[in-house]
Amino acid sequence: MTGVLFKVALKLGLIVKARVTKIPRGSATRRGKLMAAALRWAVPEGSKLSLHAFIDFLLGDAVGLGGFV
Image 1 (cartoon, rainbow, N blue to C red):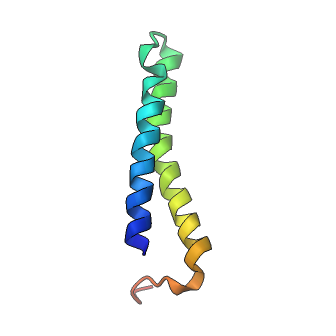
Image 2 (image 1 turned 135 degrees about the vertical axis):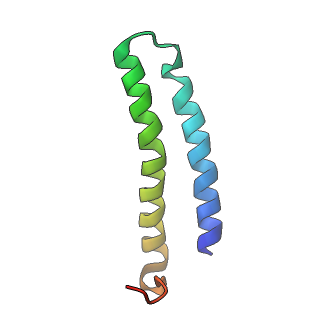
């Protein structure tokens, strides 16, 4: 189940990243380039955090870490 959720989140993250990177690509200013770099970092990190929060909400304590913690 978590594998399917990871796959869906990966596809959605790639779609969002493709849309976000198109926006500031034409910018010639330094501010625009910095914003583009920040967005390229924030989109994958945000998708990871939202995926973990969604799995925690959906499955709760049923998810284990393999007993190494």
